[in-house]
Length: 336
Image: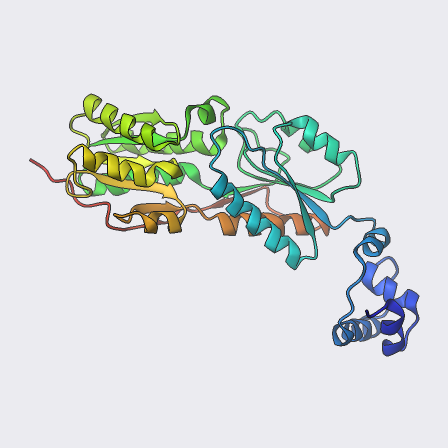
């Protein structure tokens, strides 16, 4: 194993100079720093994590706060987690995953120790009880999600309101006049989860703007619930020809349920969804969708946090514009 003394000998400097080059605690000349870095690369030296943290007063660990509450679709959450972890490793950081539904207490428990340098917080609510603590902490944080009042916070997310609007605009452009949103499980709305509420806002605004008849239906994430909501929609809106789905586990079961009820997709009914591309592409009738950019959101959240840790200015708000990919599940309305 290569030691710091080996690097010092190779670079022709003292071990303390190598330590200063790694930690930045004392200034050294640019020429010396470059020579040390070249020796580190050539010898393949990797600083011991504990020694590096002690030298820099950092743990080199980020907290990823994802309370696994009811109604959360865990496979999509894990896509965020993988993106955060892989990006953090590129910055030589590990990730502590916090999944308990502890709210402010969980954040404080971590913040009151030297376990982590900074936090990424997910499952953001419009009136999130964690906000006062996040604003007061001496550790940087980034939220993947936008509360109603985001002043003093750094937030990034897909523009879910625009995503809901984009799905409706596509259906309206195809001539559909009666549309419905099959949304997240009811408990997600009860909690005031920000992304779900904003999809509803965008869906409703675009339907009203285009003069469409519309309805919103929270739905449990189970195949049996797909059959029940499909029957309800056709009973309550017999002229229904367009559906937006914002509930990942129901995308394929809904296509099957409507076809079992005698509606061809897209001949009689067009379906759009907000979900990861790989899910939309895997359905028997590939679904026109707005992509859920989990990899980009996780990666960019880490990049924002790294800049904050380095004392750089970052934008308070980063909204990713939605993009809609046309697939086989949408077609012009089959007007009588």
